Length: 476
Image (cartoon, rainbow, N blue to C red; front, side, top):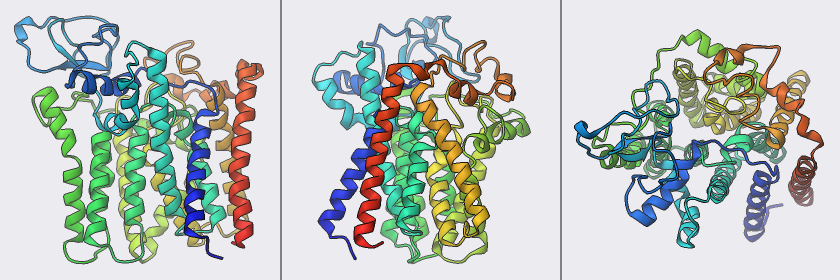
């Protein structure tokens, strides 16, 4: 039985509302100083009409997330001390420099419609609690739109129950609930750009120039959010299926146009369209060590925290043995996943700072989820042993990430007894993994944690009831 359009629309709204509720049901503020300049962007643009953060005198100008910008006489620039800065990053601003964020502007632009009412209502930028919660609101809304688009994609390839399971894994068994939806990091913006592009590209019908152009625009804007998004953007254009004439060029053209805001911002802020706010980040670390760290280390490894993603990677591999437009798309995205893995493996700070789990690789979580759904539709998990292994892996990830959503504190294990940013060797120690510190946290008996666990369970139960009961009524 086909669902009426009005009822289907209401169900999508309800799905989004319940996912949004899950982003707040943990009752635990998970954030990092990284998100502060991303949120302040709305205040400086709407109140000052510029990109510099000079007016925020309450924040030390030598904070690691600030850099000099604008045009200043070098003779009047003085060195300043302060918080440690990332290797290869720009120097701290001097006393006569203008101050700008080191981060690209994409996530701040996406959050602007959500944050503008706070600015216009007169919320002071000095209210740190309001900044964090407003950023949480914006990140959660962006992630909801990304998840709904991804949900629409995976339903093309598999059953509704499998689609529900995979979307719950995306939301609850990756860094989405512990990072991307919790504060205004770049991840939510990357997820939205990828999910929109996948929704436009992953069809078995031949690609049209219009869809390719729109997908390219989405992928290009992903570059404005985080520059490493150029890898899936360019490889999707290179390895896409051959459709009507000019469709591939339309996708590449869309990527270039979508990325223009980044170059415009860099020209206005730093005086050069090619000057990155991050500076000259070093990508010269030992690759083998980085690969082990990203995939298998006890405190950051993808296969330790998210072993269920092996199904998605198997789906990407299976695409090289299948025909069809979707398989061709997934081939390009598989190369993009590998390129991203090796890029971050060579990055001097491959672990991604004080955070729970493998957040860098989770930028491509929408690709892995879509590939999982396509692989399931191709019979990838048809055998009983494969299903049991997948179920066990999924259950493990659900336990880890939902425990972290309730009790994880970036100022806890990551800084005690030493800070992992200065002692990354701790990330390889099997006797004291990060996830074990979360599971054995002394906070589990706190009333707030118990209330958050109950609230999360209630919201999840409502989502499951709505989905499964509706499917039963429709006979699907």
